[in-house]
Image (cartoon, rainbow, N blue to C red; front, side, top):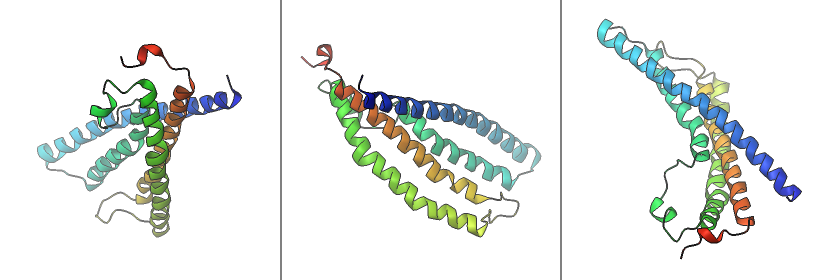
Length: 182
């Protein structure tokens, strides 16, 4: 195998491994969120004791699940897309690889770069102000949550890079005559 392709393959495998690990961690956040919501609901309706901090923690966990889980979802090919076209009979694996490569290079990666570049100043400003919840009893350190925006898009961009590498590998491989439409 070409040394460049080997290096790209190792890079894609490392990205896959990172996002697999983060995705599995994120799955535990879903369990924590469910337990937290059950506890919060029980406390409010059975004991009339609510907590602003718990309610904020619920939406913080939801944001983490969404932002950190996006790359894992892309890795497992579970993102929403126009499957009417992608799953059509005339879409061979090579054509799918071409669509994935084009989508990653010209849509996903530029969008991720844009989101990272535009969200970093947002996080810096929040950190500089020592932003906390405006609600009494709310959570401090709002910048930590906001820092997950660029983090999530970096992870998604890395997974997009891994998908682009896998697509290049599929396009570089000799075509499989059994996968061509008849």
